[in-house]
View 1 (tube, helix red, strand yellow):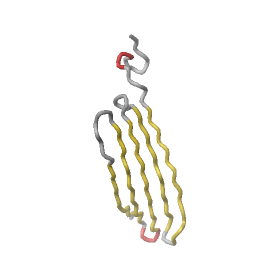
View 2 (cartoon, one colour):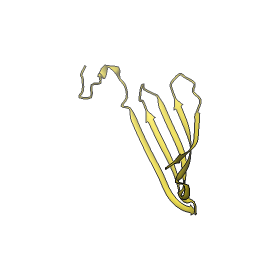
View 3 (cartoon, helix red, strand yellow):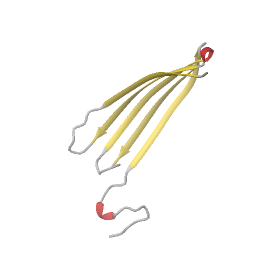
View 4 (tube, one colour):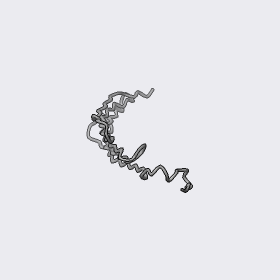
Length: 103
């Protein structure tokens, strides 16, 4: 038995949790309204709270700036995919739209 510097107890026999996140985005000037931005984000996690837990998240987002009225219109959609041992789970889709007005 030993206690390491991170405070975990080897007797629990948990795998080392992992997390990774990558985001790719780009701004375009495709309309006379203002800048258009899009991004794609991917996250992955393994063994965060228990051995065998796995999760992925995919995010697609966009923003259209309307310079003349100081407004940004945005939208995003996200997919959560979680796999838990011995528990059936469904994917979750979340979407949002909105605007930000500067005055």
